[in-house]
Length: 338
Image (cartoon, rainbow, N blue to C red; front, top):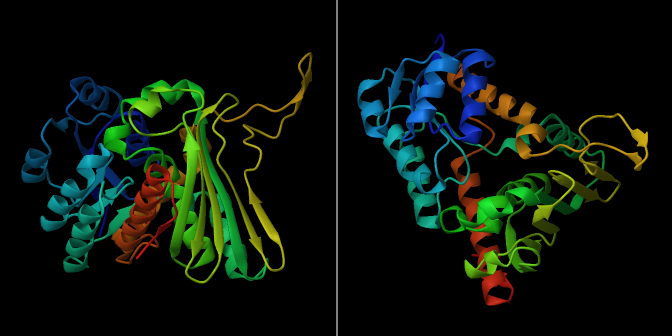
C-alpha cells in the first residue's frame, strides 16, 4: 500500500508530539484527521499541522473520515473502548499505554485483536524503541552478559508536575500503573519470564495530597518471576534535578546500565556551583527518539503487513502486574499473581 491515512485522537501534551511526528517525520504516514473534545487543540491542528478535517466526536470521525488507522492518545479510561471500535471498523490501531484501566478491558481488547488478526494493533511501550534500550536487548539476545537474572528500573518525574498528577490518580490507576508500566514491560522483555509475586512499599513523603487519593509519591517494588529471576522497580514524583529514568540489567557474565545519569548532553559544566551536567526535564525530551521510532514502526508494520514486537498480551500483562503492585501497596503484603 501507499501512505497510511491516519486519524489522531487526543491532542494534549503527548498527542501534539505524536501528531507532529506523524505529520512531518514518519515516512509513509498521512495524518489526515484529528479528533479532540478541546476546541483549542483542534485549532492548533488546523494552524500548525494544516489538518482541515477535524472532529469533536470519535464515533463521527470513524463514520465519516477516510482512514486506514487511528492513533489513540486519549485518557487511559478511553483506550479500550476506542481500540475496539476502530478494530471492528477494520482499522489498524496504535494506542498509548495502558491498553485498559482494568484486566477485563485488556482481555476484551485481546479478544477483539485475535478476531481481527490481519490488522496491526500496537501498544505504545516507547522504551522498547529507544535506541539505548533496544541495543541493550540486542546485547542480551547475543549473550553478552550471559543469562540475565536481575533488572533494576525506575521512573522518576520532576516534582513540579506532582500537584498536577494528584487530580489524575483516579483515572490513571495510580503511581504503579501510571509510572511503572514501562518498567514492568522492560523487566518482562529483558528477563523473558512472567512476574509471579510482587511486594510494594511507599508513601507520600513530599506531597501529602496523594494520601488522600490512596496513592503515593515515592514507591519501590520487589518482583520475583516464574523462573526465579528478580526485578526491583521504583517510582518517584518528586525529583528536583530532572526526569530520571534508568535501568540496570545484571546477568551471569556482566551488567548493562542504561541512562544512569539523566544527562541532557555530554557537556560537563564547571562553574561556581562545581562540576555538573544538565539533565533532561521530562519524558518527552528523554524519549523523543523512541516516540518517533515507535510511530515509524507502526506505519512500517501496516505497509509491510507484519506483526509488531509489542502485542495485546504485553499490554494485558503489564496492566495485570501494575494492579498487583497497587494491591500489594494498599494491602501491605506480598501478592501472588495467577
